[in-house]
Amino acid sequence: MERAPRSDELSTDTELGEPKTQEEWAEYYRLRYERLRKPLGQPLGSERDDPAEPSSIHIIAKMDGRVVGAGCWVVGLMFVRFRQMAVDSDCGGDSRERAKRERWLHAQARMDRAG
Image (cartoon, rainbow, N blue to C red):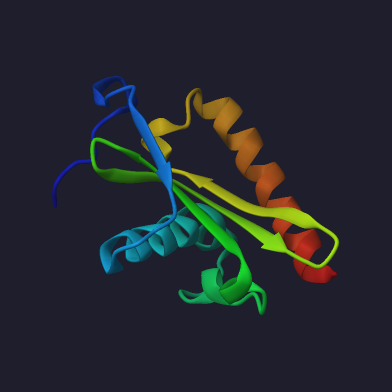
């Protein structure tokens, strides 16, 4: 298996946009699962379990052609709510700060699921 490049090996050019190809969608959901659900012991597929998923806004960040970020916004009649953000571990900066951000994101995801 090929090693992912470290953040210092990546270009500083980041492309943002909606996932368009099957490959981009697969990488988008893989990143959401690996960074947000797997650490919580959630099953594969749980990254797609929100009923608002089809009507949400999905954004990816790509560096050197590789998906390194995934974000999701839920759109309602009177609101837009940022729901998830996953960043590839090679692009997340300091590991202690990354761990704090991930704990916050996981806690936010648990609160969102609780209602």
